[in-house]
Length: 120
Image 1: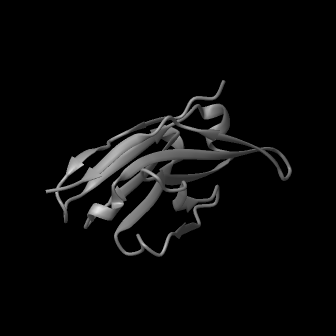
Image 2 (image 1 turned 45 degrees about the vertical axis):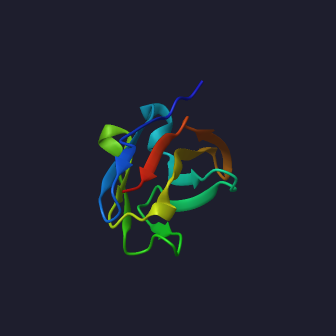
């Protein structure tokens, strides 16, 4: 079973920063598009940021200019740098991997999530 492990969540004041990390097995990481999703209480899970195998990125409008997604294939890790955090960023953040195992065929994997709370 593929395991993605997130870390870096916590409690931060508005305007503060956090850096989330997600590590996965090397057997899938290099051939996976990676993403961060989040889910607030009572809300649907939403895409926050994504990075392709080639390094292209895209962001939710609500986080553009504040969050940066990056990946380190040598470390089998993906990161989410979150700056200028707002209370509305409070959610459980999930790491996601879309692993392409044959042409356009893919498996999807999720981490267990890490809590981010933005509050004074």
